Length: 476
Image 1 (cartoon, rainbow, N blue to C red):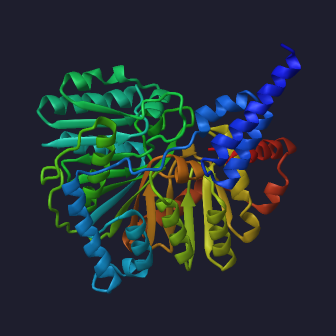
Image 2 (cartoon, rainbow, N blue to C red; image 1 turned 90 degrees about the vertical axis):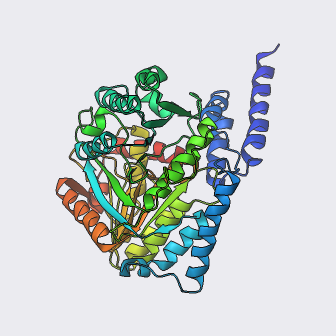
């Protein structure tokens, strides 16, 4: 067969494939155009890349409750919704009252019930976070539920598994859920969990596809006895203690006691049910009644490709547009869409002190150079951009006016907003938000500010890296 005919057939196939798999899947127009370029100009490499990175997810409600449990939760949702509509619902803090519209939006958008009796402590150091987690594990009497994107087969990972196995041998129910690709990429494997399964613990492997990069479970949740919970950015591995190649690891997690733990538990149970087909009973052993002494209002917001909208991103937007004094955010990966960029730009133009903190060194070079480019786009509007120099910053946070904020697993990028399963805690309390703002301000001592002049004077080779990385950033 003539080689030119073969090449023409390949080119034609790529055109047809692009039309079918990109436009018929009703993609975001920007992503559609980016994938169209890859499929047309890189045959057949583009086809292989699309199968790995780009295939769309069927949007259906995959995470389901038992019917009776769903009805029970629906009653709570309807009651809270009605009482907020007619003004009967009393909020426990002035900060929560100031963000009533944000709370109402997330309630309707994500059925994110507001809980008010919570005690919250912030962990920004790996040792601090894992010391608290080990203490909670050792104190467990009924169950331990852990859900992490990455569990490395290293010293910390093995220490966690050994602690869980010990509790399983004591008769405590242990369930450990991890993402197949995230954990495998981190050096873990199912063999690493034999000590736990031999002791009677259970493991769940989320989406066991080692080819598909998208639609991963990026959540980091721990619930012990239904009374204490953790949520944030830390995975499980030595690097999160600051002993990896990136040096000191600056992250953020919340330890929560109170009613919000029930919502973390619910999120775990839904993910466990999807992964294993087993749903833990909806009873007091897993969902105890709690009347916490704390007063921090919290909503647990879950996002992912199975949701109709983008609740975490839209929660971020509501916080930004509510700001009157300051917006401080941290993210290791900053590739926002146009709506987020516009919100930050308009906040800065209106006189709000907007500050963005990103790493000074890349763990993923492509994402790093794209992040630098997108952050620098905001400089002309008055947004102040900083690179964190004391190791690597992995925190995914926002704090607004020192009165409200969010901490969780969702980065400020299109992958977290559209492609991965994420979970964040949104809180409305001056004590917690003030603490988070002070920690951000303390981090500034370890940062370099990117000024408009410094960015304009960057070398040509950096400009080229940024341009290439930015061009392909919409892919997904």
